[in-house]
Length: 404
Image (tube, rainbow, N blue to C red; front, side, top):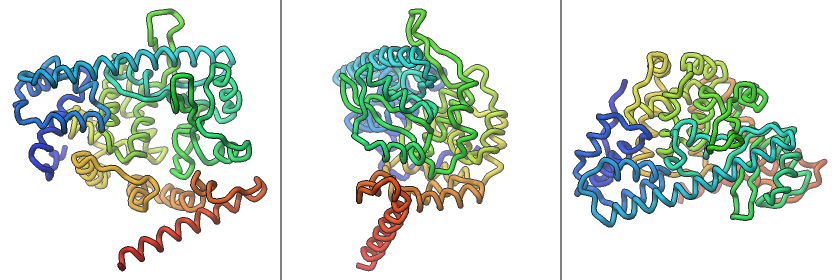
């Protein structure tokens, strides 16, 4: 395996980031525990460390490992970590209870649904609801079940976060992938998803659609009662789905890499089979980067099939090094920028997938395109023209700014 790249950030930031990576484990090895225990905590910029842990979504993990293994923690930092861990546990338990309630209601309505990420992932991969931070519930359904599922959520006081006309809703069912719902406890608490990614990412739904994933689901218990179990993705499907989700965000938060690292030891995971599926569906490079990052950043030992995958594609080490640099600098992206789209394009190893991605990127309208002008449904194909004009306008504006 390639060694991690040299740090190019300030020394205190490097120390913060290294310690943060060391703390990103639900079940740390003896070597990692010793590393945390031996860390010179006086060298840590604690306000910056806490900010980074929050940004990367791993504050609960860091708190548990530092409180359990670090020496010489300042009393105020120990108190802050303890409070953060307790607050996340309370929030996680509430979300878990709510997910059980929602899942039970959908089952009563005979609507198939797969909760993923959130409490389902915390339990299946981390083995502890307190160790993963989440702010909503992601529930995957069949596209044909969207209307019944929306109505079922309304019966328990969950309603769409933003109004949409029936025509626009039908458009998003074809081109989008999710809709947010508000509940009695706040906004954006549930995301009802009928696909894992918007259609312009050009990932074949035959490989990752609901009907493909559902037969391989199992059930996990989120509580102690007999009716606390919910459907859960298989370990192999979860690894691929998590890799797709991390890639969509260019792996810019450690929590998404920790999710992958914690999923790899899951029982019954056939990594060779997962890699074969990734190759067939054109996301082998995405999976390879995910595995490489788990190895380089979180010291996860990866099996020979993963090593062979990484060695087979010279782009995987290059992309991984770029991801590490972004993580070290807490880089974020405008997800409608040309820089972001170029990065996503490089992640697709098949020329046909790259062509489909470019075409759909240019021709698939998004929310901002629909907001520009309200059209009757019969004229919705004209939103392609609106999108192209917006893209051209932004490109011209960028060229003018460069000349100035």
